[in-house]
Amino acid sequence: MDILIMGCGRLGAELAVMLEADGHSIAILDLDKYAFDHLPAGFRGRKILGDGTDQETLRRAGAEHADAFIAATRGDNRNAMAAQIARHVFQIRRVGSVIFDPIREAVYRDLGLRTINPTKIEAQLLRESIEREEE
Amino acid sequence: MFIVVAGAGKVGYHLARALVADHEVLLIELDPARVDFVSQELGSEVIMQGDACDAATMERAGMERADLIVAATGDDDDNLTFCQIAKAKFAVPRAVARINNPQNEELFSKLGIDATVSATNLILAHIEQELPWQGLIPLLTLRGRGLEIVEVRVPQGGLIVGRQVRDLLLPQGSLLCLVIDAEGTPRLPTPDTRIHADDVLVAVTNIETEEALRTALTASTL
Image (cartoon, rainbow over all chains, first blue to last red; front, side):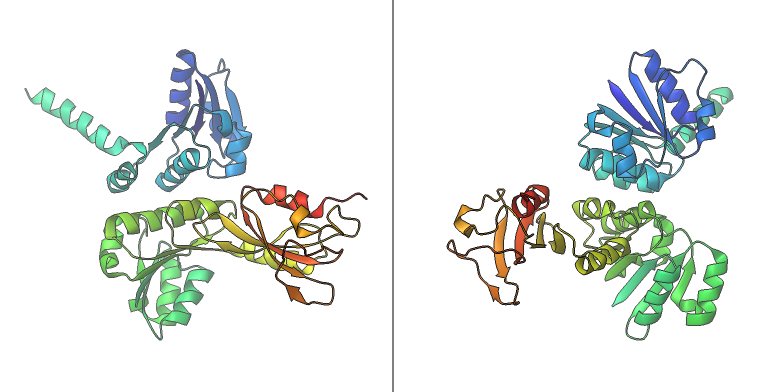
């Protein structure tokens, strides 16, 4: 698949490397050129400097032909907006988005976005790790 | 009415100042310095500090009894989120959003924001009406229908000059509504109406076929 990722922080970069290892073709976007330093030297995907909530930038990054889009910046509002542009403007069928605020995540899930809430997942994992040690 | 405004920058502040005499207005602003300033100018009951996109803040603001909300920040992603959360979680009946990047206007209306205001587009429309520009001048967007009313001046040497309306090949979804001649007399076009150079045509068009309509009306032999 051609996969477009917005946000090249630790999360976005990690995801890009994993998906590339699975054989996908990756394009990754970030506003900050130093963010691409999170990628390993052997990364073969495209790096695009620009704002993922800007339709023109997304088009330049190949959104019209992408099979999947993932919004993985640290900003909930940016992620939700970019994911909705990917779906409603570029008609990308597989769209995933990170939303840190559990309430905002629930609203956007109800609106039909595929959302991941790291806050809830981390809290659950931490709880499990503590409870396991008590046994 | 109870009106909640996100963002107490220049737009939000002046809006609140204009509304506060006749309506109950509450601004939500993240920056404490800005909150202090507005409290001094308009009174502390008009503003609260917080993240307008945060549901707990919205609840404190009394969002569930808001009649109208206005997203007036300088960031479109914040404006969109504020409107979407307010509508989904607090059933706010009417949301108006300021749009900073004009490309977002269509997206916002597609996502259910009731009205949008783009300063860039407003200024562009004024500039285009002033210029002797051979193209379509957007006059009005019919929201939610994907239709637009446009104006075009028939160029000298245009391919349609001398033709009758019945012979014009317009794209599907486009409709010629008005022909204004060089003297300024408006006429409703009939199939027999003949087009002259410097006539001003007013048409309704699909946003998608706007470019095809432009070509049909302004293509030139020159």
